[in-house]
Image (cartoon, rainbow, N blue to C red; front, side, top):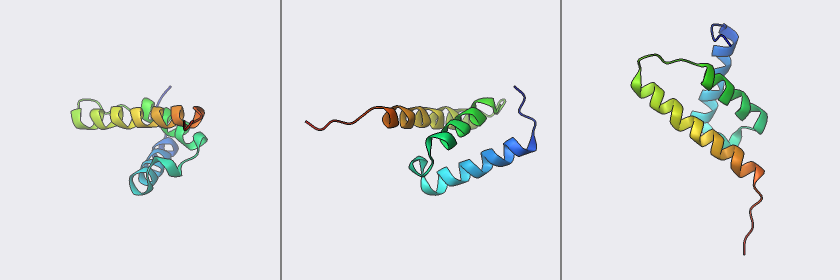
Length: 75
């Protein structure tokens, strides 16, 4: 899967802007899945800090998916 399309990059920037301003909870599951797909396809090359940030954000997205599918029980 190539990542050279301008539309994908613009969508990634838009979604990252929403996440940076309002957080992950403002996105629905479809938008979270799209963000995860775009982030996984994005290659930051030798930029170590960007790669770390990408990994942290992917962990948060996966956690949000897990929390949305797991019913919470208060005992």
